[in-house]
Image 1 (tube, helix red, strand yellow):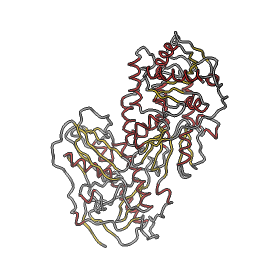
Image 2 (cartoon, rainbow, N blue to C red; image 1 turned 135 degrees about the vertical axis):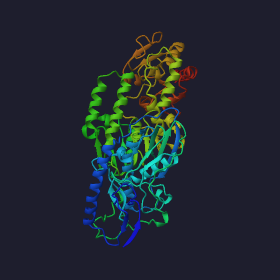
Image 3 (tube, one colour; image 1 turned 45 degrees about the vertical axis):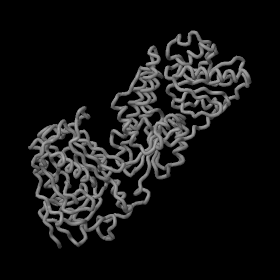
Image 4 (cartoon, rainbow, N blue to C red; image 1 turned 90 degrees about the vertical axis):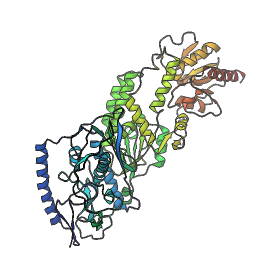
Length: 608
């Protein structure tokens, strides 16, 4: 039996530590009795530490938002994943990443006042299965073993490393006794932790905000303050010379000692590699076909309602591709009830939809399995998942159901400047922090999936362009020539649909406009224009052309129906359909180009 002098026990990540002056590295197989003896000792130490902290008035740091003018004091970045891991190691690393996600939420945005003490465990709390923590890697008694909460030392290591860089006073820190290749211990900048008596504590000399972010492959800790920190003496424990440390003697992921009570069998290959979670909302045929192509049976699909099983067409996703389908039935039903009680247009409705998107995303995130390594998420659910840290350590793709909020609001601002009299073009803008959150989340996406040409163009090589679905429905073929040349406007009278431009053109060329939706710009909006109002299906049968010069159009379904029936179409570039036979594309807001396109189509209709 070898003896190595240490200041504290060692584990890679959160795990149990023997608070002794010696670490005994046994060649014998660990037993249940040795584990029980250790647990008994740990309970005594935990109780004593908890009592001292209670008497000392140690407090959890409050959470604050980012402040303008803060400067970066220090940063520490470390990799989440290791190359060449076995299946078991990969599964435990996935558990570590899940544990880091949970702990990071408690530390991110923590505000540490000048002269106060930050405590890792006071901030994070105890890591338990009830709290969502899972098995991760822990180094104990010379073996790397699975343990609930395993892997949290990567976070404590990064906090300690950043605290040293920022010049904070180190109140308490315990070094690892063994060196895992590539870890912070190899550089002597590590801090092991075990609830609650092996802690990391530091004290800044100025007000500090802590930022913890988890990207797809890295953990980052940053300290923000108002000025560069002065260097102070660090009260660290005596450092164990690196040459006296040791490498782990065993690993449950590769150990062949099956008689050990900690032995674990290799996991199923699919669960070790990870699976994909699809988080969707209202049904789109293009996205439904995409999911059916890429989903695997072991993946998981989150839907508000299993529409095909329950007969709800709005949520008619094909669930046959996956074995695990999870609903948010109660939330979806409550959203539907509230949505029916509010106007179909306006700021109140937009705020309601944003609130419910957040609630649906939170509900799905709470049930997201930890072994999900990739997420495909609908755009409206993205900001909540990203800001809540649920995408940390995962890659993700976004199903774009509309323009990014920053682009959308800039477009509406431009339209409102052209038509300041409109009651709808400036009625709602999302909060700045939500716009910024979506923008940052989209920047981190692996791919942007959309059938919309204009949206795809915004993302360049990251865009996965889908084909628009061929429209269904029973539509009689339009007559070869209508009784009188007309143009059908296939939307509600809304400023963002280009109605001001269409009205101006219609007055100049004296053409009959067939309206198919309600007037939301005012009862007398179409004064001076020859109009009639009929249902869309009826209007389509005798249409000379469909015209939609919209500033914003996410789903040009009616344009696609018209094209399928051979009806000529004039559409703005914001409608997301590329130029082809039967469709003329004009810039949104360009009255001259719109007039020329409409006149060309009407001239062709008369000559036909």
